[in-house]
Every structure is written in structure tokens, then in C-alpha cells.
Image (cartoon, rainbow, N blue to C red; front, side):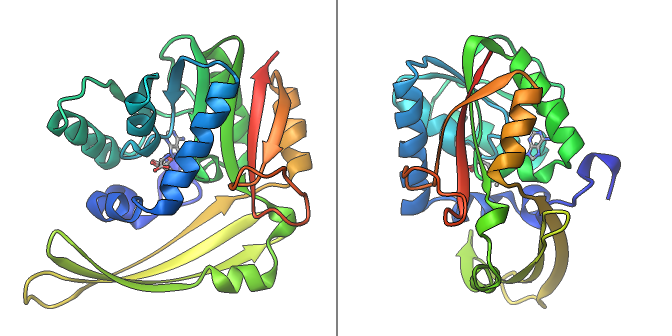
Length: 258
Ligand SMILES: C[S@@+](CC[C@H](N)C(=O)[O-])C[C@H]1O[C@@H](n2cnc3c(N)ncnc32)[C@H](O)[C@@H]1O
């Protein structure tokens, strides 16, 4: 693990971008993107920088709805796939390689980092990222992001995160068995993946990988945002309901640059 990936990363970000992309298309994703769009509309946003765009889920969704969107990400395989998808669709969308801690693109009405993306940073690096996000926003610009809520993640919820799924992506059969654990002291949600990959009749390839997500309580996030020049406008769960500290699984935060 190099210094850039202090918490490890999911195997599919670098090694299986098609698998990541295929599993990222669901009704749940559509609902999440619709909610982000609703919040952007409420804030009268036109220009958006998605600093953890992956293969472009939010970028394409927002582009199709008339927003001026730039996508960036530090996983080369994922951003390459986003570019290929844009080319195939004949869309002229800018996708940039870069780390949300230091990439400067310009001044936007909004920056977004969606789907637990900031969990890949240790706390000190998230503070660095907040300062950089601040720099990429116009005055009074908004930052929207989501992260698991440490306060509401019970042991039962962790058990429910376990998965055993088999899928076919581009004719390749992939089985992923995953289980997770939580360290409540440091807020690390650790996932262990075991992949069995069968390519047309050849012997199965086995890959195992573990990574941590740094997750937060709403209180911690509030302090971090305020320390780095933001005020919270509102917090929600991922269904768009008001956030409840001991119940909501995720904290979806809309913050404003002050
Ligand atoms: C769970 S994926 C979500 C991607 C996309 N937002 C979506 O909803 O499909 C998290 C993304 O964050 C990116 N990421 C994590 N840390 C990053 C960093 N420091 N700078 C830029 N991108 C980062 C990963 O490469 C990955 O694409």
C-alpha cells in the first residue's frame, strides 16, 4: 500500500473497473443521483465539480439534466472508463486525473464527493481536502457529500453488510464474498473481499483484498467543516429525510463556503 492509499482501496477501483461500473447501476443509484440533483437545484447551482467521480455516475446524470459538470478522480482505471463512456455517447465532458486534496480546476457553484468517497481519506487528509474543496468553490458555493454515520452503525448492520454475489461482466464470472467489521474507537469500517474470477474455461483466479473506510459522527463532521471554512446548511439520510443521529445509516451533508 503506498502513501497515497493509507487506508487501502477496493480491488475493483484499479483492477476491475468494468465490475465497479456494472455494480454501480441500480435503482438505488438512480434514487441517490436524483436526490443530489434535487439538493443542487434547491441551491440554484449551475456548475458542478465532482471530485470523486469514479466512472461518472453523478457526472452523466447531471450533464443529462443541463448542469455544467467536470469530473475528476485519482483512480486512473475508473476515470479512463468515464472518458470512454463519454466518447461512446458523443458527450464532450471533461474528466481529469487528480486527488481531491490538491487538484485545482476553477471556481464552481458546487463541489460533490458522493458514495462514501471521503471515507478513503484519513481524517487529517480529509481536512486538507476540505481546504482544497473550499478553493474550488465560488463565494457561498456548496459542498455536498455523504458518509456512513458511525453513531448509527450497529453490529447487526455490520452483519447485514456481508455479501456473497455472483455476476457476469463482459462474459467473465465473478463471485465476491465480502464481510466487514467496525472499530468504534477510530471509526474504521474495514471490509474484506474475496473474489473468484472465472474467464472462459480457465482456472479461476482468486484475489483477496481489505480496505478501511474512515467514517464519522455528525458532530465530528460539523467541527471539521467549521474549522475549514464551511457552515452546514442541512443534513439528510440517503432517502432525503432529515438526518437522525442515532438512526440514519448515512450522513448526507449540504455545506456552504463561508
Ligand atoms: C465509491 S466510489 C464513488 C464514485 C462515484 N461518485 C459514484 O457514485 O459512482 C469512490 C470514489 O472516490 C475516489 N477517491 C477516493 N479518494 C480520492 C481522492 N483522494 N481523490 C480523488 N478521488 C478519490 C475513488 O477513486 C472512487 O472513484
